[in-house]
Amino acid sequence: MLTTRVARLLEAPGARLVIERVQAILDDETQRRRAFREWLTDDVKAEFINGKVIMHSPVRRRHLDATQNLLMLLRVYVQLNDLGAVDSEKALVSLTRNDYDRAADAARYLLLEQRSSQYVR
Image 1 (tube, rainbow, N blue to C red):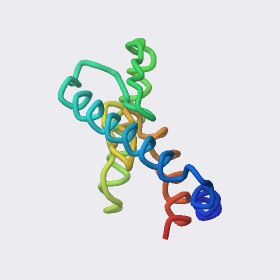
Image 2 (cartoon, rainbow, N blue to C red):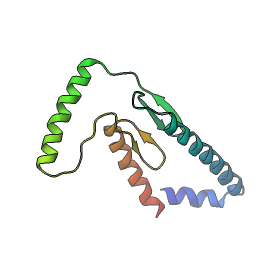
Image 3 (cartoon, rainbow, N blue to C red):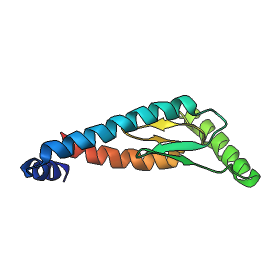
């Protein structure tokens, strides 16, 4: 799918102009992502997705309690079975283009990025 898009783009008369514009946009996005990472602190719930900073509201007590209980149970299970690591919601996961604050979202987008990278090769 990505290979087809690239092939179509390269057939267009203005391909070079489009590619230069996209590169300029991505370069700007890279600068904003660096600034986001410098600005981000442990007490801020935010993500950097497709060039935009997405702010999240603080969670409520009931959510925190449920998260901590699940985290404790999962950590024990993972450690007993030597399965790796378990992180809480505040774990920032950095992928090719985005920084995700929530592990479940990150896992979903990681799968999508892996699928899309198969077309790049």
